[in-house]
Length: 355
Ligand SMILES: *Cc1c(COP(=O)(O)O)cnc(C)c1O
Image (cartoon, rainbow, N blue to C red):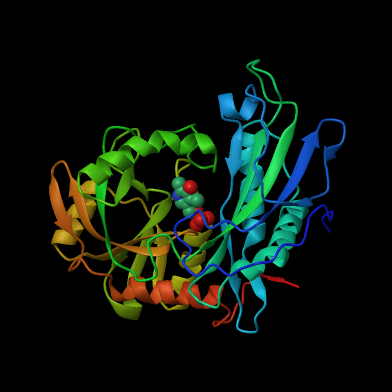
């Protein structure tokens, strides 16, 4: 149970959630010191935080985060999708940055508390969900180049309708050759703040080229397709229930997405062959031209399943299928949304019900 240092506020359902700024009005806070370790979670009104200008996290990037969602269930209750998996990944991210690991039980207790208090911000619109953002940073005041000796964990939430809207238009993608997102031995496989700002200029270049998203290639050969923006990628070969879905192997430079892992299971359950296999950029183009690859989609918590329609590359552009969302992509998206919203059975126990 969290502390009760909060004032009850009136919640007003958000009807137009926007894209990441429709915050609810509470946050959960924990602190870590070497003497006391982690404090218990405390629920607070969402408010600005005072920060010393010489805070370690701000200067040296000792900052890790997570992203997961809570969904309204048919009986009106709330359920969070696979929070224990995010808790585990959050510990790995923290350890990579020499930060203390938050025990999974505290991570999930913080989530239970915030969802319980702020679920009233969700309107009845079934396509809306509560996006949860856990964050941890080194908050010691020192500019010594060493790990912080104290840490703060914050959990906040906002109402979301899916990052690319509720309808599933295919996106166009631009292949980034100049600045790779991740490299062997780097931090591409953990969710830390420092991975994202360096990707912003590729995102701007993609937009300048008329594309919505960036395709990341491996840093060594510049040939193997790794991810799309902040999402994992899937390639579809063939059609219908006999289709084969392939996602790049976790080579140490890809973020191991919870959605990616979930879709590998759901595809197999729908009778498809689901495999992990590296896909080259030239192979991707060739197989689209000869009809081998029939669909491509990206997946992640924020935007769920997003079809890819067009690829723009320095050596020429190509279209995937007829450029519109394909049937395998749509079937997997529906299967995932049905699971999230408690419409499909949950044999793996992925739904964490809030009581
Ligand atoms: C968060 C993230 C993903 C998706 O992970 P999920 O657990 O499915 O939300 C994929 N790639 C990157 C780079 C990410 O940051």
